[in-house]
Amino acid sequence: MDSIDTFINTPLLISAGIGVLLFVLLIVIKMRNTAKSSFIFYVVTGITVVGALITLLNQHFIYFVFALILAELVLLPYLIIKAFDNPQKREEKQKAKKLAEQNQAIENSEAVKAVISEIEAKNKRLLEVNKDLVSQVSTFFSRDNSMESFLEYCNKMITEKVGATGCVILVADDYDNMLAVKSLIGKFPPPYKLPDDLPHKPIRVETNLRFAQFPLKDNIFGDLFSGGEPVLIADSVKDPRVYQNGPEDFLKCGSYIFVPIKQQETTVGLIGLARTPDKEKFSKEEFDTAVILTDAVSTAMKPLYSFLAYAEHAELSKDGTIASKYQKDLIPAKLPVIPNASIGCFSNVIEGVCGDYYDVLVSRKDRISFVMADVAGKGMTSLVVMIMIRAILRLTVNTEQTAATILSWANRGICIETSKIDHFASVALINYNSTTNEAQVATCGNNPVFHFVAAEKKLVQVTTPSEPMGVEKNTVYTDINIKLNSGDILVTCTDGLLESLNENGVQYASENLSKVITKNCNASAKDISNRVKDDLKKYCGAAQQYDDQSLLVIKIQ
Image (cartoon, rainbow, N blue to C red; front, side, top):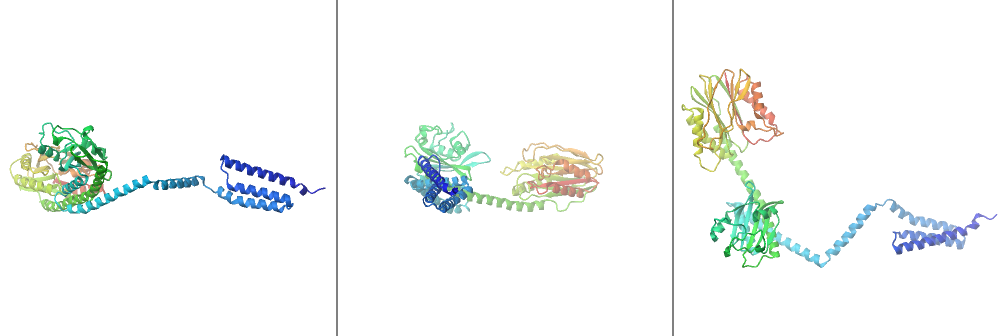
């Protein structure tokens, strides 16, 4: 019987034929681009066909085995790569490569080169202007009205470099929510409606603009400031935002450039440039120059703002330190001994505030006056008013007048003061008669007076808020007469104590004060004030306070 090897030629011919067919199909796929076929498939198919034909001709089957091994070795790396390949990552690399090629092509184009060259030139000019302004701004630090002087310098520089006939610089006032003119030079025809009663004379119109303030809407300055984008108005006649005020030549509007001044994306001011109708209209290039110069002004303003803020803080701290020293001298260092009563008090002074003042005045046998005052303002401002109140009260409590009359006299004396400083104060005055155990109470402002009735174990407020001292000279205050018994307590404090905040923003309030006094009602006045001080400190914790905290306790023996 013949060996099976005698039939090997037939499979070899079939293998070679199929291999040729596969090769042809791969070529067709490549030509028609119907699918992606790797070059490896061509190589593997070719090796298989060649191996089959050589084996068929030489009848040595080892050639076909070697051909298969070689085909597998060629195919193996390809399959390994495909097995561990990341198609998404490969696609991203291809996209990145394509994008890089596109960018390279764009960069090599003449149009892009021109744009890049223009941007570089613009940035170079901006750097040069910034360098000049930053070097100049330091010369304004030590001047009076340093910000106004700096803006005046910037105004002249921008007007000259842009070739404008006039320039106005407006700065926002956050408190009043208005735009105020800070610098004006040259001819700047007003683009807003002038007041109807303003004479159309150059000097009157210029003065109106120089000291004008504008709301942040319903006028060209406010609208452009709120918009926050630079605007070129080449022809104001055709622009409805510009108001034409009259036929006079000096009022006729030409072209304008408006550029907001920004600090960290916040608009803080506006620069307006004008060119009269008899001059050539502003060009796009001049508009770009104005934007560059305004950016430079904004950059230079930042260190000047920081310096002025620091200088103001340093001045306030200095005033606060001086005021704190003198405030301590005004408060009694040692409390007097009073028949049938004990006294306790404390005052927590917040740095830079210095508005609280208390006093104990032994004027006669039948009158001891207790004063608790909280003066508006900070630092030296509050100290001046505090000294005035202290002097007036010390002169008047020795009279026969009631507590309310004494406060009325002091109020008239304070109201005479017409300076620009705040001269308002909350004052509580208690006239105590140790021979009869009676008290007469009068208050103005927010300083309350509480009466702890020992028989009822209850703290009640005997006063109500009223108009502060220094508001109106004809204000009438009211006397409240209280009969005191052994164990009764009178307490007065400033609103800074009751409005002290804990770390959750909740006020200390009279409820907490009442709890401490009721709990310690059998202690001396000094001990009671110390317990309130400790409780207040524990309540507030690490929360920052913004007002002085003062307390005065009088306990009847």
